[in-house]
Length: 336
Image 1 (cartoon, rainbow, N blue to C red):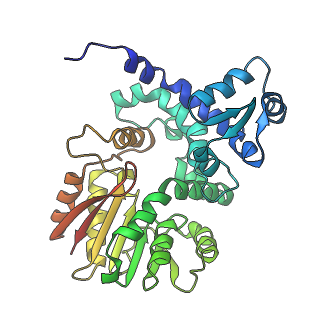
Image 2 (tube, one colour):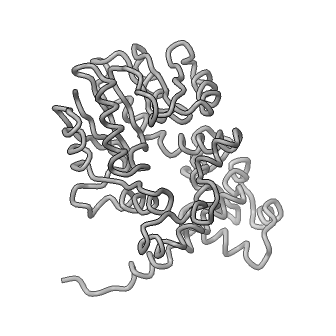
């Protein structure tokens, strides 16, 4: 039997210290600055406007957290922060963390209230419009948000483009496509596939720009519609990435039924996100993401592969399987 230890209790209980240190570094654009050139303590303090009382501890805390390197008194990005946290690079994932800093960090302070009431703790709890209403009313803010979603999903999108047997199919529709990275990666890796991205009309110009930037304008098109009100366009494969967890159980089942109706016999539905392991004990990110859905939505929640398979069978899918993608993400595949 292991001896009781307080280490993990303290590390997790005070984990917000490290989290906010990283989020502030992103807000200050520290990693973007270091991607331009390595800098000393005094140079960084000057460029970022850091007070001398805090600057040294701040930078060395990031060093100890393995987000920076230091050689001969000069600070450098690590390979990971240089790739993923330089906001000039297409691989930048900091947009999601920027949102975490400005929105989720304060909202998560009300988790206890959410656990007791089952109610969201975001803007709606103050009588303000929800995130998506505000986003879709501001084209530039929407563009930044969709870019952030691409950064979060890009690795899994590339894995789906490689792992799924696309040679057996000729067309795909990405439901709730956002910027369009999922259907883009599928089309780039599988030149025979024609694709459609389905999302609200406001997303169209952002989607079209992304498709054009990737040289796919002749093969991938945008379908402006709400998946609540309109049928899903027919295709051999229906994709739903980071979509189902936003909604309550009845809506999840409705979307799966719509996907079934859009598919031909032998067609496939691919659902992916941070699928919780069936034992509900290992995929910590997936479980915490479900708590984030509690904070952000009236009825959304994350789920296990077994849950999703059950909903797929209920809709009529005769064959299902689960495949890991990258990190916490997996896909559940249903065949009609």
